[in-house]
Length: 131
Image (cartoon, rainbow, N blue to C red; front, side, top):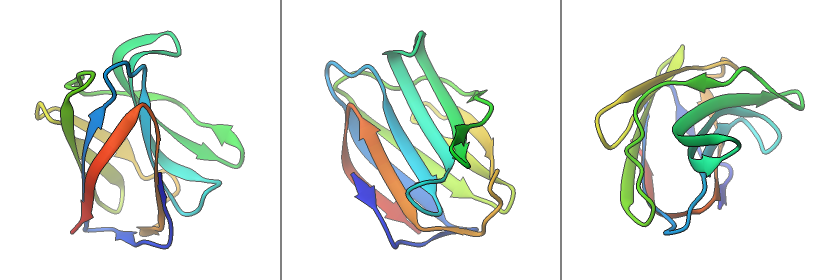
């Protein structure tokens, strides 16, 4: 699922509610200025890419992945609903997971507004809201 031409600006909060599929290996939430660049890639991994039960964050810039960032808990369960809240500040994305754990991910591209949000992998998104 991809949402284009929307506006996620500094000072706003993005709330996503979804369900990881019952046989999910991983899924991703991506935020960026366009479809080529990703300023925040959040990838909960149940069992994928050599990782188990970890959230990996990263950025994709100029055709390359940057340094991985691993922080926070892993409240995700296959087949169960989750909630992710992302507060966008000038310097970072403050991600709060369902269990209350937090991820501080830098705004590596440095823009004050992003216009593309996409979801990939083993997930069904029930709702997302920007306030």
